[in-house]
Length: 107
Image 1 (cartoon, rainbow, N blue to C red):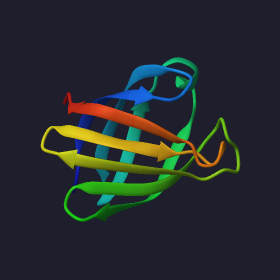
Image 2: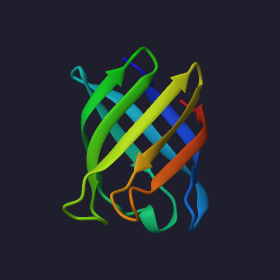
Image 3: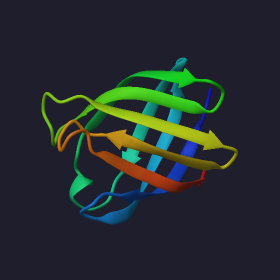
Image 4: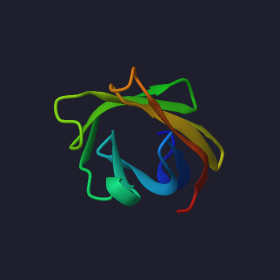
């Protein structure tokens, strides 16, 4: 499985920059993401599904977030050793991409 572990990354949007943590776990052969997000996203409920491996270093998936009921978000994360970068594509503002970069394994 790709990216199993705990990761910290810089989150960058046009409105703010912060650090967030995601833990990627193997849940009986399926990927599960657990979050600790900053600021106004702290209490957001996020559920990802249809998480797939693309090649040997990338995960993609779809999901939903409580802040945007009924909307589908997309995530892509690429891993290179203990480094990670990617984005979440949000279906508002013409598919705005929330970048996460300079990700590093913390556990």
